[in-house]
Length: 291
Image 1: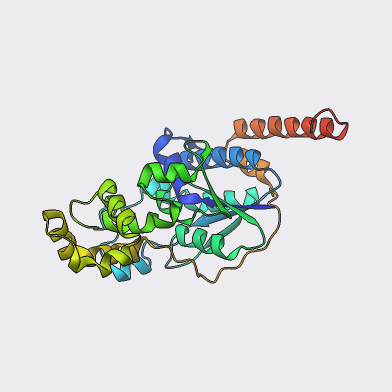
Image 2: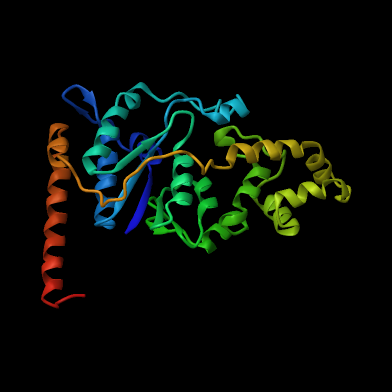
């Protein structure tokens, strides 16, 4: 059985900002509709699987204790979306997902912990978040729902100039403006990748920092190396959380009723069509028509 780890936040924001407003009985439900529609497709794509819905919990995390300015430039979540979060959590329950959130940590930390600690099964991360690429290995795959494809090692190298195991080091040097993570001034992905490929790791670069030949770039690097260390502490995912989950195939519970209650008749019809397809395919396979 494959355990699929869903980065719920990515789907929520994409649904909210990517779809038009949808009002049903006086309540905004556009993000809920977009999320349910996306989950319906994901479940159909990976039938008879276990799904863990990883969710952010609270605005402040341990990263804000390390660096109070972490994500300080981000706008507050719109009230129209805030009001839909409880409904999205309920939707996760109706889909039969094992929902996990932990105060003081982000969904990425939950995903990292599950990817590390779930040894019995193959793990697949469903997310478009670049930070999660640092988790890829022989046991952990990533399916990008935006690109509709599995991310390969070659994809990571094309994006960061290094394989998955060195993504954290590259990100630590270049920082991340979307999360207000500083990085080293003037260092982008190409320069960061060049340095990591030359020295093998950020730690080795730090050990050799005083012996770098004199240049404008290296002078900045020497002066700001502490920013890279800080950035690494912010970008590195906590993979040792105390989490509880039960290994079992995710089964929907009252999903149709939930969808109809919120006016999503089209999603119920889609689900019925998908069920008919899988029933026909299963019947045909039993009589040897398909394998």
